[in-house]
Amino acid sequence: MGTLSLRIPKSLHEQIRQLAQRDGISINQFVASAASEKMSALLTEEYITARARKASLKKFQKVLKKVPDVEPEDYDRM
Image: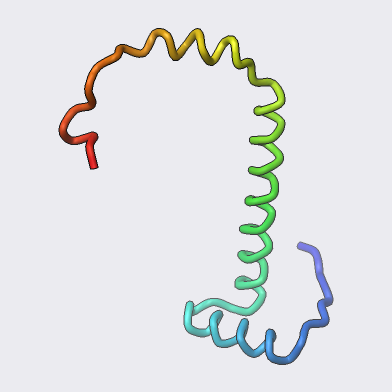
């Protein structure tokens, strides 16, 4: 496991402490979880962007032509 020394404003530290306590976890767990969530969001964005670059409008339209032209079921309506 690695160690990270971090300087943050006292007000932010206090909010993190309170939220971690409310959630029943340590400050370390709270910050690690927050960092993981942020990384996940950024990596997901990169993944989607990379996949989008490989997309083919022609192939997409070909697949859409296979979708039947029918009204949606009642359970699929809002």
